[in-house]
Amino acid sequence: MPTEISKKIYSIMAREMGHLGKFIVEKQCKDLGIDPEEIDEENLDKVADAIRNVMVSFSGEEKAKKIWMEIKRLK
Image 1 (tube, rainbow, N blue to C red):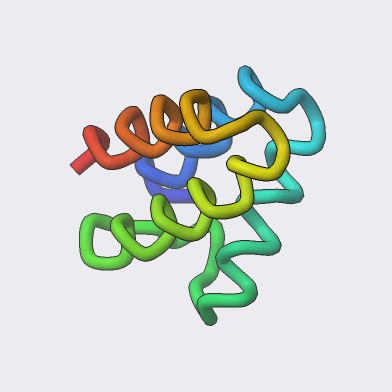
Image 2: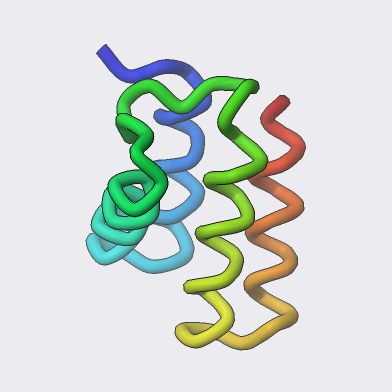
């Protein structure tokens, strides 16, 4: 069962990137050694930063920063 934070991150990324959003979350978590179903307050900053970095190439700095701030506010 995914954590509430994981569910919310998946939801944000699905809204912004469609089905690709889930894969972005999973890939960034895998690279960080974090289970994407178990994102919590302790590892949220690392995940948010990784997602922001990859989102810059997909949608530009402004949208990446907006998504990053929304994820960081889940704490």
